[in-house]
Image 1 (cartoon, helix red, strand yellow):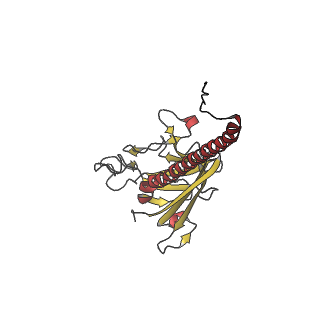
Image 2 (image 1 turned 135 degrees about the vertical axis):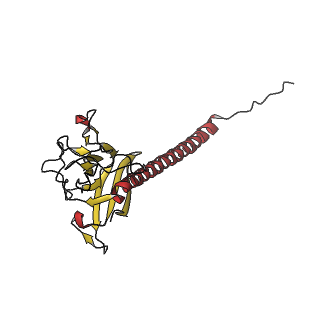
Length: 242
């Protein structure tokens, strides 16, 4: 008697039924994982953008705290050969933040720092026995396209000084030289930059010279996973040099 041996396996009908189910499950799983990955990419990009916005404003702190004055345009004894047509003005669109700050021989946190004086009498001592005026630099935060830059405008070579300013003149990157470093690029994702001035009564004013505090607000925009992402931050600081 010949015994028939049954071999285990799937019939063609079973395969035709199961294969589409497996494909649907696989496609669903891949789609879910793909979407999860996209969400992680967007969340990470937005977090980085938010941190970038905060870092930019934290970087403004020293210049705002130690400002001698917020100004509408350049200090009268300073020259910027690369200023915009019509000169620097705070009343631009988007806003330009112009800070007047005392020129120092070293970093503000260096205890041996000294003011730089304009040589109007003698440099012995550097202040000319109280005759010489302190040199004030301008630090300018401005937007060009989607870029936010920081520029320093210091004394022209024609102005005789007692001491050398730690903050040196900067220029557009295309015009940068060994004696005029490139402007600092703070961000290339700027969608808006705004500045609001307040007087001693916390009233909003439009004249920077009368302001005792300033609020800087920045909005950044980028794309991640083919979608637009945005982040914003703002900070208000009062001058310490009253």
